[in-house]
Amino acid sequence: MQYDIVVIGSGPGGYVSTIRCAQLGFKTAIVEKYDSLGGTCLNVGCIPSKALLDSSEHFHAAKERFDEHGIKLSGLEVDLPQMIKRKNEVVQQTCDGVTFLMKKNKIDVHTGIGSFKDKNTLTVKGKELIELKSKYFIIATGSKPTSLPFIEIDKKRVITSTEALNLQKVPKHLIVIGGGVIGMELGSVYARLGAKVTVVEFMDSIISFMDRAMGRDLQRSLKKLGFEFKLNHKVTAVKSTTKSVEVTAEDKNGTATQIKGDYCLVSIGRKPYTDGLGLENVGVQLDDRGRIITNDKLQTNIDNIYAIGDVTTGAMLAHKAEEEGVFVAEVLAGQKPHINYRLIPGVVYTWPEVASVGYTEEELKQDNVPYKKGSFSFKASGRARASMDTDGQIKVLAHKETDELLGVHMIGPRAADMIAEAVVAMEFRASAEDIARISHAHPTYTEAFREACLDATAKRSIHF
Image 1 (tube, helix red, strand yellow):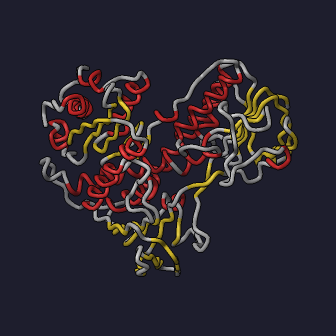
Image 2 (cartoon, one colour; image 1 turned 45 degrees about the vertical axis):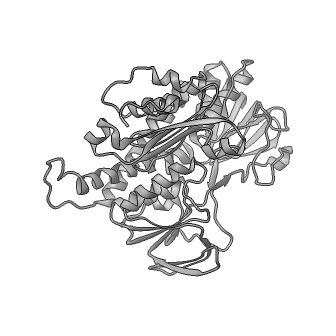
């Protein structure tokens, strides 16, 4: 079969790229090793985790807040199998939606493991072996969980995020190795449902890739859920039995601590997934971390092969992969798209949510950039008081001389949605003054962004 473009991998980067390619008039195919389209994100990542986060937040709100709202309940209990069932239905509906989009855009779907035979030929081993010929290829095979050499992930007691999304009983004590996004989100799910959660983190802060203030505020909020944190601790051993697990961790003085629980979630990051692609057959170059090396057009050293998403450098984010998928399609169509990687937002879907775009305060200090900052606490927000979501703040960083927005960092209700306003503003190089002079509906959470910008402009916040 002959195509203009073949995309390998059907996650957000891959399927979005194929749609854009088809829109631009290319004869396009997509290759996916699993029967279900959507990749990690839709099947065992973003979508199912958000479904469980929502379910667990509803339960937690009913248990902790409904009385204060004047809503009386009795016999409240967790039905985890039903939560998992609903999550699976959400996943199925979402993946079916991608299948529909492939048909709508007349994209051929080939199920099987794709491997390069040469630069213009991909063999696909599924129910039968087929060969696809194409002028261009886009690699979008994503990533998989990483671990430590001495940890055996048995998928029973020592688990990854995939298994954590399908537990049938709420853990009594969940030990989370890693204070990043995945650990905090899935730890939140089970903490809300009644589990004790202990986080072991090598760094001195959780979500350490974000502005430090966000990590401090999130840690404070999660402690209210019953989280325990062992920061500056290095895991040295993980041992499991059929019913329990024991994690040994050392602090920076070398003092060891044993933590016993019934599950251990290993969430220390992800690594590029290129197994079975046959990159060696065509000579595609990788860096020392196994990532595919690309130029500013996301082109590999083989001129007709491109790579996007988690298999390349940069943040491992679904929306970053989507942007890159569209970018490559438009490059191949002769257009001149652009991606500002600095303005791709990061989000942690705990509650309160955390969202960030642009430079952190630590980065501005390191680069000796003159800046000013403003902030606004949700404790002073009328809308947040009404919904009982007063944890968190919005922090704005602006250039000291030009007032241009350089970074916006939020922890609070619906921060994942609110960050979009900051992204738009920064794409158009708006100043803090610009946001401060734009009318924001009252009462809304987004007023907090305006107030933080007022604070950054001339310390003239109205409500704080």
